[in-house]
Image (cartoon, rainbow, N blue to C red; front, top):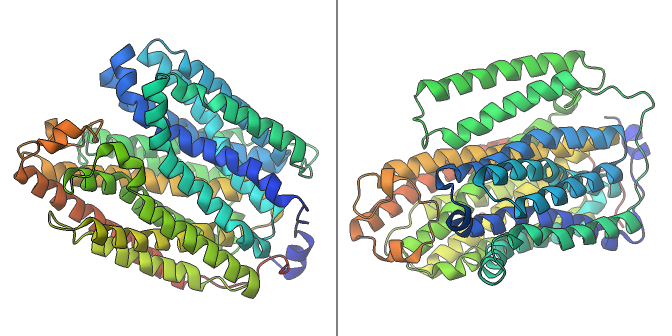
Length: 498
């Protein structure tokens, strides 16, 4: 992309940008809180309406619908108006929330969660697309702290809020709580958010691309969900899903070359090498981050004896590192225009932090674990936020929605693959040990204090051994991210320093 084109596409920053961003970030917070609140409420849901055999599909249906709809929402924003498409996704999410709160059977809940996931696909991708449209990359560093704080609040506040809502109001309010928050977002953004229309006259939707992308993402997510748990990695079911994923990927790439308005334009990946590098960074960082946030509380509750009631606070050191690192990187980027150093430092910190977490055992102290977590949080803070900025800086403004949805998709798929691989490693480590869950896997509610406090020393050793393998793989992912970060080309950021 030429400098003249970049200059012509530099957006004018609104004077009330912080107030506008608060509404956009509230939608991001809404998306993050939902998954964590619902996860906390699931044991109560099963006790009320039954269906324990299908409980995993409550999560899978939402994840699958979110992943499949994310690129579609991004493309719709590029073709029409980012604001209107974003508000539509919020409305769909709210409708799904109301229906899920009224579900009387597990089948109904799964279906309504899928509808909720369709709306959820536009929340995160739409928020990042709007940030890209409203703020030139050079100015974005000033507001990275706001994004990091929002993500930290969602990660920490979700489990705490979920426990309070479920305990005092009942599990249905885990869904109903989205209504007042969603209404605030709708009114706030409808009044304050002003985005120029991007409608391009005659519009042609890439229905073939949407179909192939949906099929491909579905097979990838189902592989990540079922491999190592429902089916063995080498089973014919998983091998068929993997083969189908590859065939659908090839067909999707071929369709994008011929489409008039491709769902994910190939020019995103061929225009500048920074975009595919940023996609790699987000994918491997997603693997490490999702694995860390899932299995660190498990290790602390099981091996270190931390109360499960404070599970939301266990990740505070990691989140503090993320917020501080994102804020520092943003301020330096605004003042100097330099940014390559941050993903390099972030990937290195992520590698070292994960490597140190892999050394933890039954005698590791809480303080030592917290120090390691700060390193991991610093790594993700320097890497993920900066990778989003690098990706958006490497594409034209007309492709901002597609680029934002693509980065969100890569991060989510990385997390899904990470959870699947880590779950298989953990199950293999604890299988057969006294006190282990049935089948050697992670229990549906790993924070059941009575089960874990009754665990034998042998099982504690098995959990420590399982998390050792998990964080070792996370360290290898961090090393891969470091190699990718070193290949980033530091091109000028669009926009001028304030």
